[in-house]
Length: 167
Image 1 (tube, helix red, strand yellow):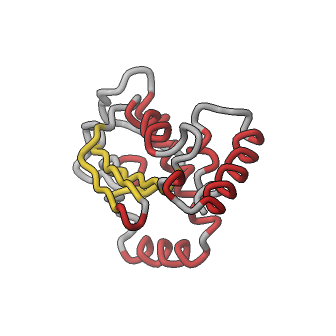
Image 2: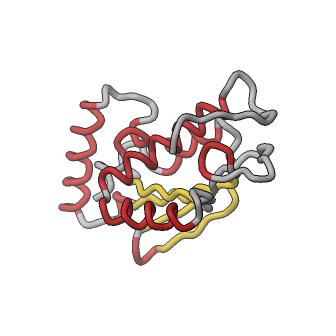
Image 3: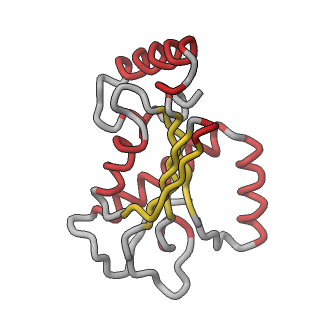
């Protein structure tokens, strides 16, 4: 990972492709910082493939609580050209999943990684909290309410707090 330099023409206007790639780079940095085993594996793969890693997809796990969940998180990415590709429902697990296809971007012949490779697909799952037992519902609502307050009610609360409001 390093600074993002986009030498190729972009269909995005006003630098939004660079912004979107920066979002993914920061998500990856945060994930690797918090998951030492994943970081070790990532570094091993990177060392073998001369840093030519392609990111197939990023997965987000959310809770459908008080208007948050797939819809609020996906709206951020859809503003940057992502489109719903399909979905699955898992009623017994009280889980709903959607996947999103990325916007088309020009990728250089040797393009790879987050900076110059194809944009990843997205998979966003949400636990249907209102279908859980009452105790779990109350606990999830209380915890997410506290996190939302600490985030100042920001529209992209899940993007900034998604790793905290998932249990």
